[in-house]
Amino acid sequence: MHKFSHFGQRPNGHSLGHCPVPPLMLHNTLTDRQEPFHKEDGKVSMYVCGITPYDYPHVGHGRVYVTFDVLYRLLRFLGYDVTYCRNFTDIDDKLINRAEKELNDPADYLIIANRFIEAFHEDLLSLACLSPAYEPRVTTHIGPIIAFVEGLIAAGKAYATPIGDVYYSIKSFPEYGKLSRRSIADLEAGARVAVREDKHDPLDFALWKSTDVAPGWESPWGFGRPGWHIECSAMAKAYLGETLDIHAGGMDLIFPHHENEVAQSEGLHNKIFARFWMHNAFVRINQEKMSKSLGNFVTLRDLCNRFHPMVIRYYYLIHHYRSPLDFTAEDIEGASKSYQRLCLALEKVPAAMIDEIRNSSDPLLQSMLAALCDDLTIAKFFGLLFESLSELGPNEASVIKGLINEVLGLNLVPLPKAEVVITPEIQQLLDEREAARAAKDWARSDALRDQLKILGVEVQDRKL
Ligand SMILES: [Zn+2]
Image (cartoon, rainbow, N blue to C red; front, top):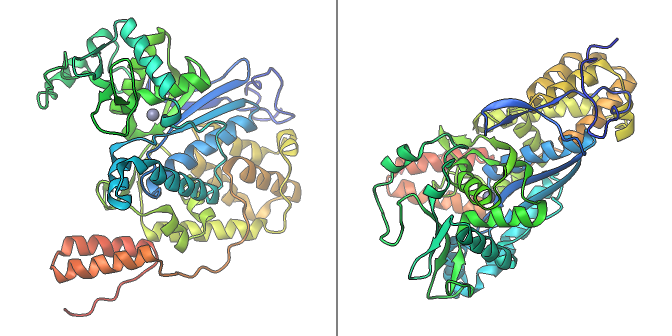
């Protein structure tokens, strides 16, 4: 008898070959607990909030999409038929502003969006993320969005104002706050400012915003644009139905974005919107969240200039997705060394095919799989492997390499020697830093030095 005899069955009622399937435990934000994930019919729907494509994706984006790529791969490995949907917010003030600035015409916002959607695809491909089945864009789903808003108005959950805005009425949804565990009373206490006169309640949020200037669309409420939150409710419904098995994204989306999605979808359908809500923690630099708005971000393509994309993927994976990741060059250096060690140890071993892995009863493989199924505890997965790396049998090494390939998406090819190339982006950071030094803005100059160091550029300062 092996040690995982208590493990469950595959969703379709068969065991996973001879390999007993551990119960998949996932942390659910909705209950703030780890819960067993199981779907009787074997079909899983998964929606992950996508990006607003107005710039190159940064290291924070990479973490979200690598995390949920592993979940997607794991579910498929466990035998589920997964339908994965990830949206693009291709209409937004940031896109319009960039089009106005760069192309002198706000109506050209789709040129900007297309450019950065392409860049996003390239970057995610280099990180070996699999493509979702659907990648809907807001601008091609205005019809379903309008229909959704009309439904909410008919259900008494939303109202239009005289100038043609439409708001969701928070008071019409008593469960508001259940995902982020906030009470309406507490939210109201913090919402004194910026009360718009035509809102019934300061907490009400926009489903549709009127505008006098293009871009926009005709609607029953006049010319306007959809609010941000409504797109995910409408597009998730269009591709995955009224109840999703898994809805995921970065932790910063829990409130208000996901809370508002719950209000919209459950307000309209009167049924649970997502059974599991999963969120990954931030990437931080110097204790601050990496973000475009704080200007402390490193783009994925700049980072790939210094480190091999597989090292970056490995670096994400060894940090548990629910803990903040404090991003430092030393830490990636360390990850690079252990990844290289793994590649060299398994270099000569052929990776087993998926059925061989599923049919293996190797105890080490099973413990590693159990770590993965324990809310994606990948550090433990590798800890177990490194403990036994020098004494792996050939078949064992082959199924483990296969599992790493298949589920973690790491190809384990030994890395070529990396060289740092000064890209235009790096040159721009160097120039900015010179300017900051000239202006004696030491904080900015230090921040830029840290950013450059991560990209492999050590700055030697001369006296000013
Ligand atoms: Zn969303």
